[in-house]
Amino acid sequence: MYSQPYMDYNATTPCAKEVIDAMLPYFQEDFGNPSSSHHPYGWLAKSAVEDATHEIAGTLGISPNSLIYTSGSTESINMILKGVVRKFGAKGNHIITTRAEHKAVLDTCAFLEEEGFEVSYLGVDAKGLVDTHDLKEALRPDTLLVSIMYANNETGVVQPLEEIAELTHANGSLLFSDTTQALGKMALDPVLEQVDFACFSAHKVYGPKGIGLVYVKDNEEGVALPSFIQGGGQQKGQRGGTINTPLIVGMAKAIQLAQVDLETEQLRLETLRNRLEAELLAIERTISNSRTAQRLPNTAHISFPYVDGANLLTALGRQIAVSNGSACNSASVEPSHVLLAMGVERSLAYASLRMSLGRYTTDGDIEKAIEIIGSEVARQRERNILWERRR
Ligand code: PLP
Image 1 (spheres, rainbow, N blue to C red):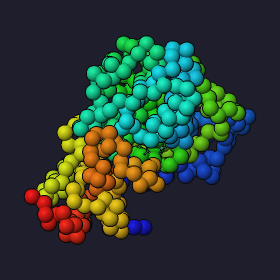
Image 2: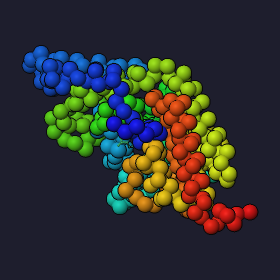
Image 3: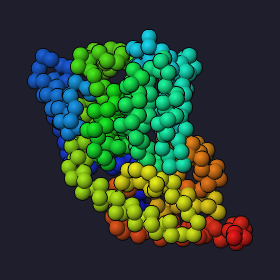
């Protein structure tokens, strides 16, 4: 167990004890296959999955029929984007997304471009927001799908989904919003009303890794999206393969726990985040990359001019768990594509940190973070001749 403060909750979260307790019986005593319809082992597993599905649907205020289990948001995003073009391709071959999406969306769109689909990439402004006038201009009669995330995983910035949904639907197009980061951090009922598709991942909300959801608003018959995994006919044929009872039970518990005291937790996190941010922004010349827009309560994203980003991260890595962007992209030495899309200069984008707080973040963690980051930034700057010569 590491003792350094963990401030990378947007990358992943630890499994809550209640979640582990809820899952445990389904690994051993109640291990049956929900598709085994001839004995009680199967019946019990099936009913646990049904209960979990109803629990998730009830918590999110949606229909149980609108949910399809996957291995996580990356798979959900692939299923939605590829499924929509396969199923509804007759309307056209144009997709609209933004340059600030998670790589799971951007890489799937790049794949679809290779398959002959046309993708328009909207920019975002310095606040990280999509300009709805740009969307209006980009929409065409053959626009099949608009894919715009709700809350950004790096900056936490929240897009104006209501307006986006209005424009998209007025054009007769479908709307997918990547809601992975908003789950457990913001109320989602209004969003799920507005979009046609959304996705979730349990490991972002103190649930297990390897389980997620596709949300299809209009999935009453279970026919809204084609399956990419054939075999067995599970999940009404929408995704073949043995249903993972323990992980599904764990995800339901995690989602339910995340909704309990959501407002109190939002306030607590926002207070901690604002304190961290205020102290770091008090350091000379530092810049917030997200403070001017509506955003997640747990996320701060700050640039430190006159600091070498790679050196900063390496030095901090031994003392505190923060990141400079998306964990899913950490193999890359490129600066954050989200910051570049916001017009942040390359060298500054390198010298930026995302700090994402969570359920187990304490006042003590914030104090340590302020101290550790503050002294490391000062140390890096002392070595930089340009810092001395600044005006
Ligand atoms: N979308 C967003 C906004 C994310 O933050 C992530 C994970 O970082 C994903 C998609 C991918 O989720 P998963 O790890 O469940 O594949």
